[in-house]
Each structure stands twice: as structure tokens, then as C-alpha cells.
Image 1 (spheres, rainbow, N blue to C red):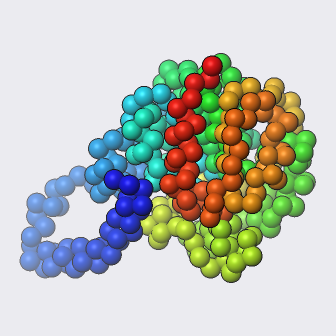
Image 2: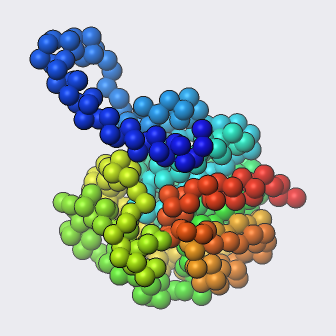
Amino acid sequence: MTIAKRRFDRRSSRLTRPLAATALAFALTTGATACAAQAPEVPAHTTITHDDSEFTGTFQHEFADVEGVRMHYVKGGSGSPVVLLHGWPQTWYSWWEIMPELAEHHTVYAVDLPGLGDSTGSPTGYDKATLARYVHTLIAEQLGVRDARVVGHDLGAAVAFQYAAQFPEDTELLGYLDLPLPGPAMDGAAYRSLSWHIAFHSQPRVPEAVVGNDVRDYLELFYPQVAFEGSSFGGTAQRSPFSDEEIDEYARTYSRPEVLKGGFELYRSLDKDAADTEAAAPVEVPTLIMTAQGQLEGVRSTVEPHMTDIVRAVDVPRAGHWLVEENPEFVTEELLRFLGRSRS
């Protein structure tokens, strides 16, 4: 099934839900639900993929205990391993659209970062070097993957960078998607000046107080802000590349107070992230950079001093920050071409 058809089918399936609800109401009045009542409850973390037979035929939800954090990840496919790391405000689910195509050639691990998504417990820090250590413990030490192709988007890209910097012997390739890298070229103060939301999310306790009771509304308003037709690109910021179902899924996890706080902690750690980048050894593994249309040079100027083997750098046409949602076909083609490389 093509990516476009998968997304069309997923969006179309929402239209059948009112009919399903009507059928359920009828069954309740006729007593026809006696057998259905015996059906086991679907765990919350699998609900979003429960009715996607193509997806569930390939992928499984798994958990692992890592240094006091119960980490959630989704695994499927066969072949060389690919680790996918999400940013804010997303979870592993940000990759669902392209995972089946990747899984035709690779074993895919889509991870909920520590303290986010359906991972539970609090990591010792939300700086990206610490989060990379948790991911490495899961992937390399517990799952035994020592040749990971690590791909990160948004703040997950900074985690992917730190993974490659700290554990080069366990990193085969690095995919770095749409994030200026905090570091000497852009310290914490400069980073917070990039956008209102970075400054806002960096404040102690304030964003939780403002957003806490209206998480879904906040996310729904936020996603168009950095989309291709959003205000950052001269548009009206009214069009979102996310379906209602996708927003519901992200709101499900970020509505948990500890996850909402963890998401904002990603921003509060920017000063340490910048210092950690400066202290890190240059990443020597082959690297792919992808950015929103028109943003390549700005991002590349922050990462190039820290990556010695950038094999391809490209902006994604007709895409703002949400590369996968806005142009999944292009992103998939680029990733498959890159991930098929060998480090040597």
C-alpha cells in the first residue's frame, strides 16, 4: 500500500465512526452486546493502531525498563536496524505513516523518549545527552543493536546527534531532521529568541499552568504555526497537516501532567544542550540532513562544525517543520536511499 493511500484510508476511517457509534447504541438497546462485553479492553497505547491491520501485521508495541524508566517502543520489519526518535509535541507515532515502507527493508524501532509518550517514569535529565544514554541503553545494551541507523526529528534530532557523538561504535548512520543544533553557533539565549514558543516553553512552571487544562486545544493551534503554509512561511497559519485522529493521539499522552512537564523540560535544558554540543566529539558517521523548505542553510550552519561526513543535505519541497506529515513520499525516498548505505 502506498503512503498516500495509507493516509487517505486512515482519514477516511474516521468518517465511519459515527456509523459505528449508532450500531453500538442499537446493540445496547437490543441486548446484542452480551458477547462483545466479554472482549478484552484494548490498551491505550495500542488503540491508535488497533484497527490498522497492515500496521499490526508488522509492528508490535514493547516495553523495557531502563534505569528506572519504563520505555515504550514499537518494533517491526527485518533487515538492518533503524531507530526513530521523535520531537515535540509528538511521540513515536509521528513516524507511523512511513514505518511500513521502512520495515520492508529494515528492522524499525520507533521509540517514545524517556518520560514522553507512553514511556513512564522520569529520566535523570531532559538534556539530549542524557536522553541519548537512555536510548542507547535500550537499543544497544538491552536489545543488542550495535549497528543502529539513528534518525531523529526536531528535538529528537539533537538526541540522535548525541547518540552518535557518545556511541560512535554503535552508530552506523545518522539522520538529522529539521533542527538548528544548540551549541556554539546558537547558544541557549539565541535559541530562545528563535520563536515565541521556545521562549514560552523554557519558562519554569508557566507553560504547564497555561496549557494544562487545554492540552488538545493548544496542540491543535500549535501544529499549523510551523507548517509550510503556517505563519513562519508567510501564510495564515490556519492549515494543519495533522488529522483530528493524530491530534487526539498526541493529546492523549501530553494530557498526562508528567508528560506535559517532560515535554517542556526538553526546552528548559537548552543551555546544557548547547554546552554538551560544544564538549562533544565531532560525529564522524555518515550523516543525512533534511530540513523544511528554505531552511537548509540555517540548520546546516549550526551542525556542519560538528559533523565531518555529511553525505547529503536537502530541504524537503512543500514541507514546513512537519516533514513526514507534509511530504512523506519525499522523506521516505530520501531515507531509504540513505539507510541502504554502509558506514564503510
